[in-house]
Image: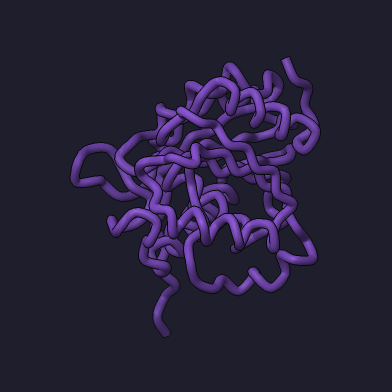
Length: 218
């Protein structure tokens, strides 16, 4: 019997906002960086989001040829290999089991990390209280729990620039059709953001997360 492929997260390179002794009972926000980046990148968002939360930023498991790391094998933008995305999703869920969060969990992903956030929702829709996809997309193909999503409709925030120069139009068009049918969707557009994150977007994410993970806003 062939083992199910898993791309494992290395616990030793996960960036945390708080030491282990200060995490108990607090909401956990998981930050998933984009392709070619690293675990410290999105930790810059933490001071502008929820003050009562703990933040964890895993490093993607694969080295990226241009520097940094990638969650799944390199492919054309917006069209990653489904098996690689599934392997990365399993690895992240296994890491989340090891992290043992004691409060509600939210996932915030940028670009490739945003695609991974939507895949986490599809694999285990009730694992997290909220999902955030920034300048990301939904990976084409079928995931076994997709059939449960129209009834569950997990809360998901999708923010992007309609003129994003990196994510292909075909990927965003597919995402725009798929998400409303499978999630309780909040969509925001940020002209001029390009393939990046702007302060207005960070504030909108904060306001989206606050009532879902049970913590106060600044």
